[in-house]
Image 1: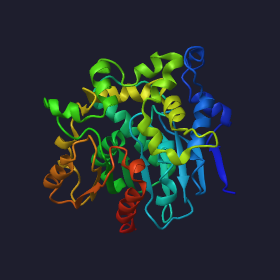
Image 2: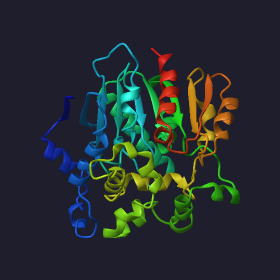
Image 3: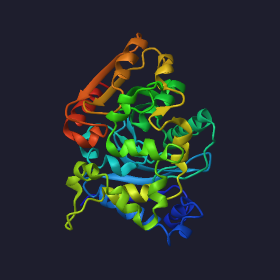
Length: 355
């Protein structure tokens, strides 16, 4: 049986989890069928497929916030750790199909971004750059608290945007930057065809919820919120391997309970975004300032609705960096779940060349 430990750096587990809750959490239970305990159970179901041994714990930051973290292979000290950052509305559970395949040769860390999942849910500044700094500095505080000197930093979607921002400010801490279908690179421009390329659920968000938080409907629907998440039938197909004896995948419960709570990180994302699909401060205008020599790998799903050309644009901008662009055949935006074996092959090939 795999040994897994759940430890807090200070205080009992019950104290940690109470500290991780917004004070309004329990007042919502009558309307929203969610709780911290249900989120924990959904995460455990997501991670039940993972065979590797790992630790899970809260990491205390200087700011007073806490970051929920999974740690694999911490005993391996001669290899640069791989740190993976999830995207919008996600958490550590979304990498459940990937941990075993990418944790064999080096330490691997995954964490819930500030404002998401089981991490602290603080208030974010309304200004886009201030919000971005809050996310970025929480990653730096987390790195210091964990005790990492350098890392291979891999971010998906919104996590790719934040990983890029982090690498721009703290390049000495990043040995290789891996951007998996990153959000926030292209500049905004009127493009009616782009809206038609979005999946149907994303088109609905753009048209109906642009003035609001992206997942406001899920919370506002109260008892019907879980049913709205289940409209994303494509998610169930991606995580079909996680089905339990009842024949249901925990992905819907996990996504719901991650996002039915205080929408802290979602507010931060909203502050950074413009018309949902774009960043107010497009990363393609900034990535050219990346420290020369820092390698970057873009990995896109061949069927993604993101702008894949940004990887090629970055190659032209970063003439003093080794920039590679990969495409995962038959994969969409969630390439790590659409074609996990091909995704693992690319990620492992990148990491195998790094000490």
